[in-house]
Image 1: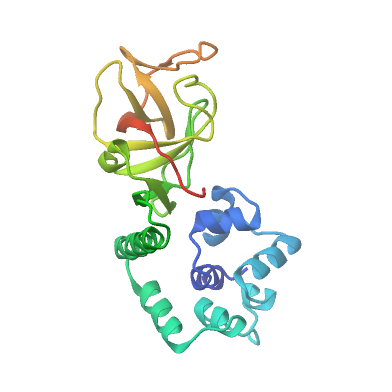
Image 2 (image 1 turned 60 degrees about the horizontal axis):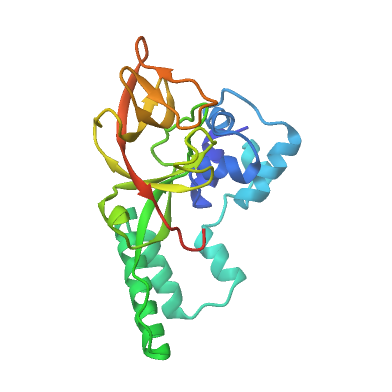
Length: 250
């Protein structure tokens, strides 16, 4: 497989490596190995990748007669009917950096809420747009958090915890029950340390955990799980868990 064409096709499709892996049904590590040339997908998987990225298998294989992929927006405009103004707005939005896109979404949410208020005569629910890691943090056996581009944007209700938070994480596992539950999204305030007894997000030997900080260990609230010792490990605190976030239309 031509790894330059693979990367170009993914980027033209507007996907991160993590999103691409999810779309074609492989792990993050497997997909990264594809782009680094460390692993070759089989024939069926090449077809799956081509369909997911909107290119031909010939292009992925680097054959001279293959046509390069068209821009994702151009394909969208071809498949759907947009006015000239709508096309211009979409192009400008796609050119914006992540933070600017969040500001646009906040503006749209605010304008929509005000329009509903005028229509229904009711006070709108205040909302925030925040970033959430695509990697779930483990309330169990640990999870890799080391992917800088693995973020998505979600809308949450405006609360004290969400306003104070720097980012959101989704929990996977049951080791913090009954304090936090599998599938819940938590608000995290970035900080290099927390006090003993506080719940935080911790990186230990390459895996991310949500646990209570104990004396030299990380403590689960579910008694079925043993404490995780910190001595002799590479570890750091990522942030303090403030509480759960109320995600809208997750």
